[in-house]
Image 1 (tube, rainbow, N blue to C red):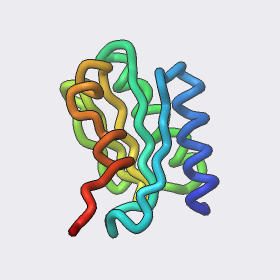
Image 2 (cartoon, rainbow, N blue to C red):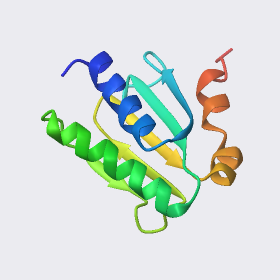
Image 3 (cartoon, rainbow, N blue to C red):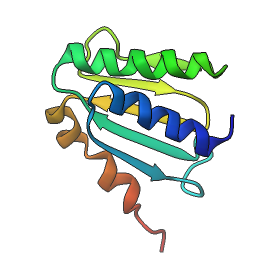
Length: 111
């Protein structure tokens, strides 16, 4: 599956379960680990876990299997690694604290 199609599948899976404030970032050229990052919030730990589960389920239906899933136990922040795309689903307080959007949108420039 092409990265653009996978990114849309992820966004649709998050929207299906009413994720809050879903953002996609193109981090190509900033890291060799991934090309895109999807960040979303859930309203509770249970919601965060459900969102991550739906992303995994929908990806698997298309033959894309997660390389790893971290944080399912606590549910404050679940990371789903789908290779070229990494999905971060967090509680709002966790998302505000780590502020990944600001970190990845405005990387420090080497002088």
